Length: 346
Image 1: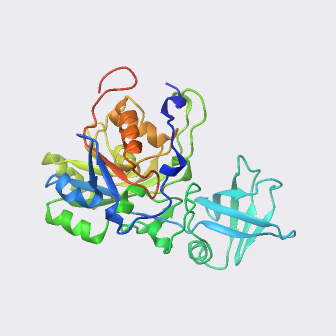
Image 2: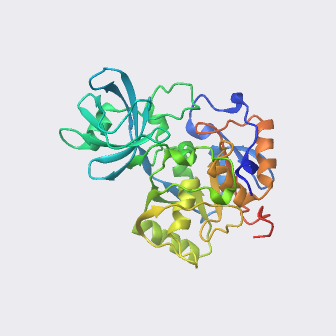
Image 3: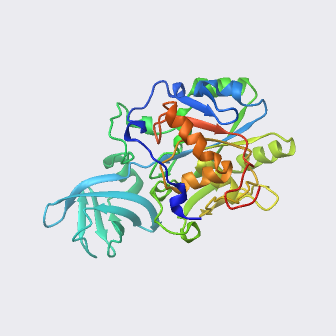
């Protein structure tokens, strides 16, 4: 299989450039039957006893705008993740003429480049008077997706209602559709929620390079499965109730933390799981997810769950005017074990 097998035509007008309000008024395509709904219909689409697992990560205000010390030239730094001590992995722009030892100033934050940039990616040492996370939160801005050209009246619109632990460079977008009222109605209908964490990196959304799918190297992201979440999942599985992952990040977290029997182990770790056709989920029974960009690992994951039907689903969504990507609409995938694109059956 080639990475080009996961491309499709995405018209610019299909990319959502506004965040709808209320959040749960977004549209929802139920793949089983290909029926159209609103996200607020979720309580009647799910089954009593279903356990929704959400990613409770919070997007870091990781976009820093400043100047290069000595020249005063404008520079932008996007912090991706801490790699040890005061050293962070980041994207720098412009990357041209950036070399080891170059110093960048962002108000009270001084960033010193520790190596040569590769495709704009570099390690930097951050020097602040006090806590780094607090300084970044005070002087940074949210890194909105590059394909989003609209504006948000409230930057917190790019945070989910479940956001707690700061650590991500992008939002777990499937959970952006939830509201407190919707969660109350889900609880009233017998649907419960559990929270995990996965620090979403930008590599999740990057198009894959051309070539064999097997040659793609999946990025690594920190995850955490709390004791209470693992316990809730264990009880649900014992009682033969469905585990519904809210977003691809929740699915990858659960599948990474599961053993061969599907039992989820609590604790913290690193996930580099690449869900490709031929993969059979051990824990997750259904997935709520947005419509993703062409040629990304997210499309590969959807294809792993739907087989070649993914093209039919995406074509129907485009034809029916669904809105795509981060602030777009969602779909509910319940029949995970369909045709296997790698040539067999699941």
